[in-house]
Image (cartoon, rainbow, N blue to C red; front, side, top):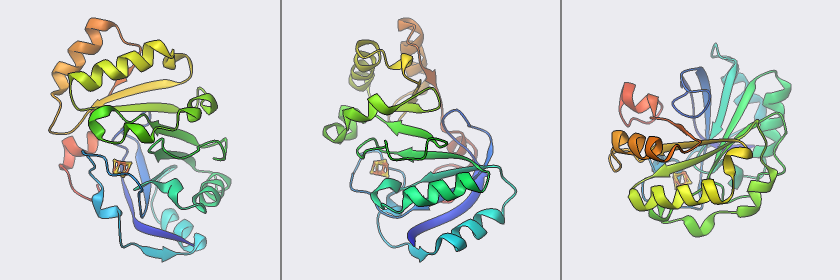
Length: 211
Ligand code: SF4
C-alpha cells in the first residue's frame, strides 16, 4: 500500500512532456520544506491505497502518460514497486523527485525529473550530488529559480559540471517570485544549454490543487 493525496487527470504542466494529457498520482509526505512549495497540502493526510486500486483509478482516465509526484514520492519506499507496475501496464511513466533521495533504484523505463535545489529554496544542503552520476538522456534535471543569485548558482552548476551532457536541463521561474521574461533574457544572454519552461497548469488554472 501507499499513502496517496490525490489521483487526477490534467495536462502535464512541466518538463519534456508539458502539454500532454497525463494522470498524476500524488504521494503523501515530503521531508523537505522548500520556500516556494506549491504542494504543501500533500505533506500530511492522504489515504492508504492498495496498488490494484491505484492502477484501477489510473485506468479510469484516457491517458498513456502517468506522472508520479508528491510531496517526495520516493520518501515511501514502495513507490519503486508502483513505478515498476505502471511501466508493466504499458504507461509512459515519469517521476518528479526532489533530488534529496537516491534515484538509482528507480525502474530504468521511468523518466526521472530530478530537482537540484537552489540556495533560495532553503534546501540546497539536501541535494544528493551522487544522483547526477546515475542520470541519462531519458532523464531531466530541473532548477526552480527564485532570484538572480539562484540563476548564477544554477549557471555555475550547469557549466561547471557539464550537466547538459548528462541529460536535458530545465529552468523555471518560481511562481510569483522570479519574473519569467527576465529569466528568459538571462538564459539567452549566456546562451545557457537549457530548456526554459513555464508551469502550463498554473497559466491555465492558477495555483489550484488537483490541476
Ligand atoms: S521537495 Fe517538492 S514537495 Fe517537497 S517541499 Fe520541496 S517543492 Fe514541496
